[in-house]
Image (cartoon, rainbow, N blue to C red; front, side, top):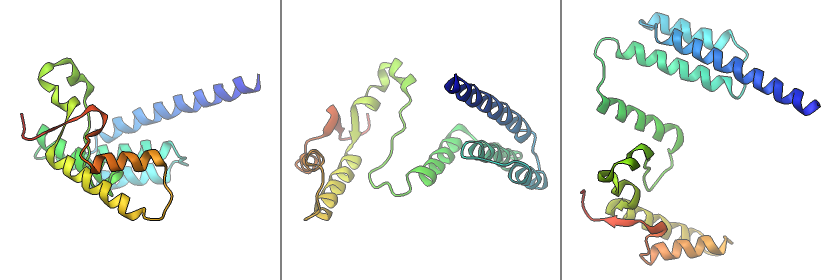
Length: 172
């Protein structure tokens, strides 16, 4: 019974957060000026007692509002939006990444012309992966590491492309 009460409480909190998030996004989409943006962000920051989950939703609403203010006059293309998304993703999640990142859209798996997205990596990426494996092996001299990991790195150094991927020499 006590466990059911906890689940009910979590479900209620999740529902309230979802409703607040929808409300914030609706408000964010109406923001048109820098002054409105400043007031909105101040409202999101000061008028709520955020926790681990709600702060992310508030930040998302703040970003959406910022996008609307910045985009009001010019508009951006899908290409520009893609660059913005990737740069934000790299800044927030992959700042220390050395080999590259690939975001996979699994909807493209439905179309045969996108096969290489699921089966290949570029020669440039492969070179970076090999260089990073060499650096990791060198950095581990005398430091214990899982034998499977060391063996995997060595196989990469030796030229074995992992996980069934193929290196594509040029764009197809």
